[in-house]
Image (cartoon, rainbow, N blue to C red; front, side):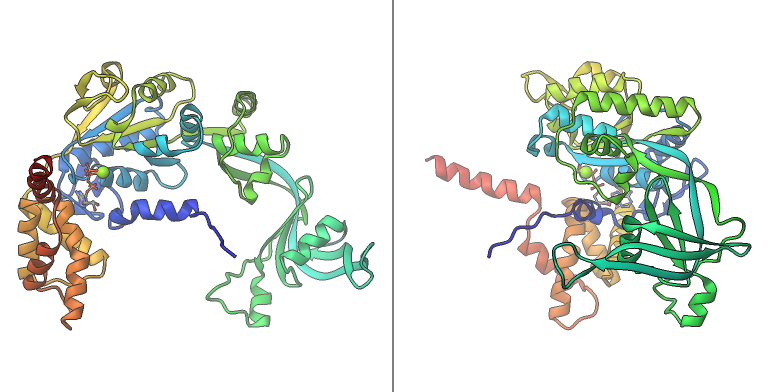
Length: 454
Ligand SMILES: Nc1ncnc2c1ncn2[C@@H]1O[C@H](COP(=O)(O)OP(=O)(O)OP(=O)(O)O)[C@@H](O)[C@H]1O
Ligand SMILES: [Mg+2]
């Protein structure tokens, strides 16, 4: 039978960042850029500007603002955006997208954009929950006959004894807890948390003593200490969520937002009332001091492809109370604003351009191209001779950095075929003939166009 499978979100994300996998951050010392650091080379001013922006974002002083990276192709705009994401850390949401994605979704454009904006606003919710916590000392699951299937037994309840270093308690629990005990394979020696109101059991891991006793393989499992104090205690949990995740959770069930930690499927459109409710809920939590908001970043690459409606929508969104930071990137100087016949700088409407902070990226000098190629080769685990690297650098200067980077992998294939462990100049010369850079290719096809027209 034919099968179809969706590409998981995480994989798409991976494809998007693969070209920038060598980038670990902005490579700054304070606010000053080092020539080479964190996988970043040169582009000093742009990196330092980004450093200031990162600080403002972290301090929450930049919400509702927007930035534009403008510069020639292959000058590191997308790379800088990735570096900003790395610098912000995982608590601050960073949502990258390419302009064309807006036109390829099945959703209405405005719905898609609203979801994107709300994915970029994080909230840290603090919850005090009553939990039982301790190491399992005894466990017994009561079973009874299945109501319809006489050959099957089903769990109906459980009794467990759990202990901290200071006390122990025996608990009886109902069917839903018994099922969770079985599903998670909880056994004696495991440290667990039982969230009574949430109806959940969480296995934290085997206790250090149990791990020693049972000779558990420590390469995959990390033992935890047995907790101290009372078995029943109030504990504060911090749940990092995004407004979008809350929207999805409450539009699905309308009830417990914590169900969203079990994974969420997203594709549906969300009712405006749901969003309003979520906003009110979050606002009330903020007022009670139980929640902090973290405006994150939406990165829109190739933004000259956006149309006038989208720009208008984003412009309005930036003025709202809860707005993330938007970072645009473009390599267009002047172009027509999509959906109009107006020519404008970067293909963007003036009122939006006016409120942007623009950071220019510059074409790379020869020594920078060489260094970037070296770093890229390293991160792809490709060896290359000095002579070949010099030659490839010249290719980068004449054609483009991106083209030179792209030749690395094919040249290495040729090297392997020739039983050479590193790329030599001849391998680069060979693949350079086989593949075309954009300029060469456009020129080539243009010559043929003349023949077609005749
Ligand atoms: N300063 C830099 N340091 C290290 N690597 C870089 C730097 N600038 C660019 N690169 C790498 O060079 C390649 C091309 O850069 P990038 O894709 O960021 O260019 P871009 O400005 O976004 O181009 P385009 O306008 O075509 O989208 C990427 O693999 C990127 O990671
Ligand atoms: Mg780019």
